[in-house]
Figure 1: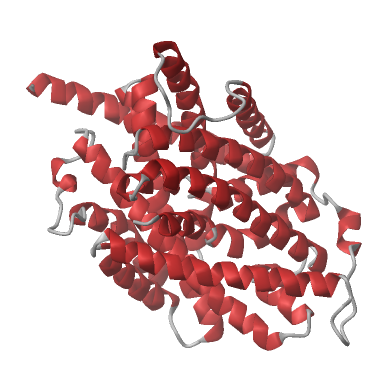
Figure 2: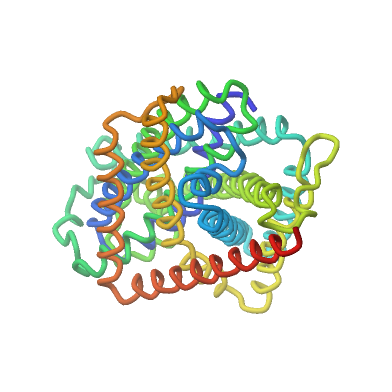
Length: 438
């Protein structure tokens, strides 16, 4: 994979369901105050990406933060983080297939959501079973298209807010008068929607293992992905929150609703189509990341041995199939329970991202201190160490504290803690069983 493909892959994995579907849900929960949630989560993901960049440049590995956590905190911790991230991505893959199918159904009402999702899952399974070079090129053009569309959206949104569109009155910033309609509880709920939106950015560290010149490629990808995502997210959310009140029905498809408010109804259909492509791009990238993580776990004897099977083109085919199985099952569930599966999936993954990010920060703190004590030269060094890493850990703790203050987010956090405990127990028992056989 080339450096340009790696950079676009980072964008492709992060600009998906969280932005095109989750942004509306976030504004409904918190109103314009969702911007504060984006700034907090954005600051955290910048620090996490810096930490991951340092570790990935020093040790490019498809297990990425799972491997780094294992080195820093022990094998059980590493396996737990790896399995948790894999489960998170498996759920996200299903959510993105259903989300893309649901958006497409607004343009083609006679197309069943479950059938479109099934077709999407089949197509992207086939793509991921080809070589990584073909996958990377496909993802590059997919991601480039949606980046261009978001830039166009920001230009139109700015023109609308400044009153530059002929015959269309500017809405101004009237919606900001009711900045936090649900108070801190709404901000807490919205914060976890935002965390989900930024989830997937860490896939850059996974892909580093299959990239040419990983030391330089990772540094470049981390720099560009972080600021582009923040500009696209913060800019898009500001426009949507300014144009659409938090009670607006248009928040179900916020990008299309803003363009319709700008007097461009045809553009609304076009941006919906782009949103479908964006979700499929993210699905593509996340399927790659999930398959490589479960492959890495199998290589380390933390998952069934069959999952490390490679094809002639070095693709972990069994790992790919295992990673899409839940997505196919979700399409069947959508047929049985229409419009109920996607909201459940989106609610599952918010706080799992925080656990993965926390493991990355703690691992970088441990491994960097270890490297400095041993006099090991690192190809990429995170600036401001250890203060910035420590600030990231404190910020992460504050997000958990805020989350525990809201009933909905508290339930999500506690269920995540329960899931982590169950995975850790399973990893510990597997390691004991393997040791007993040795």
